[in-house]
Length: 313
Image 1 (cartoon, rainbow, N blue to C red):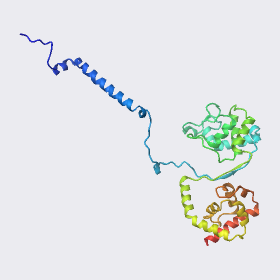
Image 2 (image 1 turned 180 degrees about the vertical axis):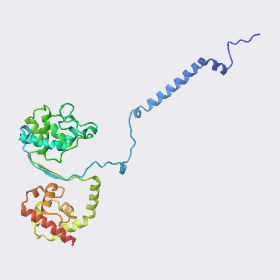
Image 3 (image 1 turned 180 degrees about the horizontal axis):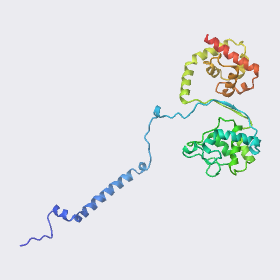
């Protein structure tokens, strides 16, 4: 009698190889379980799974970039702001000479951005005859800001080392390359409020981070010597020049720390005056030091020279 093959007691795996579609039912179960597990994990971690995190990492000393450059302080003279709205031919010609010295190598002789040095820049040097796409705009205030601050991450450096009058002359010449917007009184007032052009200003020295660290270390090592200097001057109130010193020195510690290592035999009176004028706040002097006359400057110079020299002896 022939066996009934309608029902089988167990799975014949050999037949599954010949007919793999019979596995579909099992694949569906596995697929469903995978989706279920992933869904449960997602729901349980919903609060953190969408948060971008960055592991904390202490900065490595060698990886810290030193972005500061050494720059000497200077005195920027006052500017006749009428030259902004009413430039003379002489001023424009001066701007032309300054442009050739400072700008033509990148922007080209005619401002087309075809200078030899500018071709290697990324982004390339700007075509000054086209007035679209300028980061700070093409009005006078925007042009001045560009020369004052430069454009970060481009080849456009800051020209803050040039006197404001020279920068204004350069801008007036650049404006001859195209039909730049008319300069308004509001723009002149904005420039005056921001940069105090008619007053002039002094810029301080700038040093690198490494130099600043070294200076801090030196100041710490000089603390005892400076304390002795202050004690010395307090005990000798009749030294010539003490009246000028007391009138202008608002922080005696900073004054002496600024000059304790100075060789006065190599520092002339003229250089002393210029250094103090530019850095009077950093050196511990009040603004009144800039009002000193010739004899008073000489007395202040001699006073510091004698006091520091006596303390070294």
